[in-house]
Image 1 (spheres, rainbow, N blue to C red):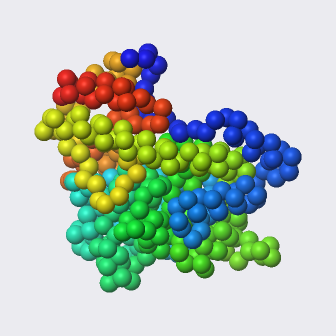
Image 2 (cartoon, rainbow, N blue to C red):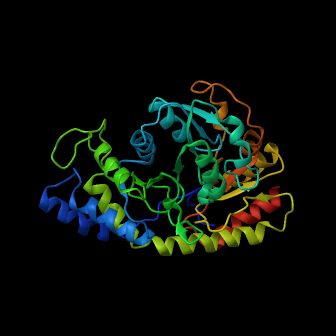
Length: 361
C-alpha cells in the first residue's frame, strides 16, 4: 500500500491548467462576482448536463437551503430527517422555522414516508427530505402527502448531482431542490451550491434573493442577502464539469467492487438503493458500534480514514433542538461507516480496504 494517507473522500479536480485558462479571462475582465459571465456559463452548462431547465448558482449548499425556504416564504414547522448533516437543520432554524423530525427507513436511510403524517399539524408548512448519499427519496409518497396537506417540498439534494428518478433529473421534483458543490461532492466548485425550481417565478425570485433582493432594474423587491457565487468558484466548477461523467462512472465501478467483495460477510448491511443513485459514498452498516470501532481502528492503523456519516443523529444535538426520539436514525448512526471512495482511489486500494474490513469484523 502507498504510505500516503487515504481519506473518506477527495475532490475530483480538473488539471490545474484548465482552471488557469479560465482564470486568465477573469483577470482580464476584472469581474470577480455579481453574476459574472463564468457564473452564467456555469449555470447554463450544468443545466444542460443535468437536463434541467435552469439553476441558480450560489455561495454554498447551506445558503441554497436557506434561499429555498425564503423564496417559498415559509414560517412554521418544517418536517425533515434526523439522518443528515447539521446544515439541513441549522438552515431551517436560521430562517426562523422549526425543524420537526421524522425517523428514517432503516434500509434506504431516507425519511420514512409512512411516519410523516403523524407529525403534521396546523403549524406544518413544508417537508424537507434528504436524498441521503445520493439515494432518491420516495418521491411519489412524499408528493402525495404534501398535496393532501397543502405543504411545500424542498429537497435537500446536497449529495444528488447526477441522480435521475423515473427518467427525470432528481432536481426536477418538489418545489425547490437545493444542492451542494462543496469540495467533497461529485461536482465541486471548491465551495458552492445551487437551487433548481421548474417554476419560472420561483427561479427569478431565487436569483433576486441571492443578490440582496435586487431585480433587473436595481430595485429591492425581495428580502434577500449575499448568496452569490464568485467567478473564481465558477471557473473551478466549469473546469470540473468536463470530467463529471467520468467521475460518476468511476464512482459506480468502485462502489460495485466494494459491494461485491464485502457481500461475502452476511453481518454487513448496505443501503438499499432506490432506482438510480450517483454512488457518491459507500456506507457500511455494522452489527454493532463496537464492530464499527474495531474496523475503524484497524483501518486507521494503515493510514486509512473512513468517516462516520452521519453521527450522531441530528435529533440528539440538544444545544440547538429539543430531543425527539428517532430510534432507527439513532441506531443506524451508531453503526454506519463510510469507506473511502473517490476518483484517485485505485481499485487495488479498494480491495485492500475491503480486505481489512473482512479480516477485522
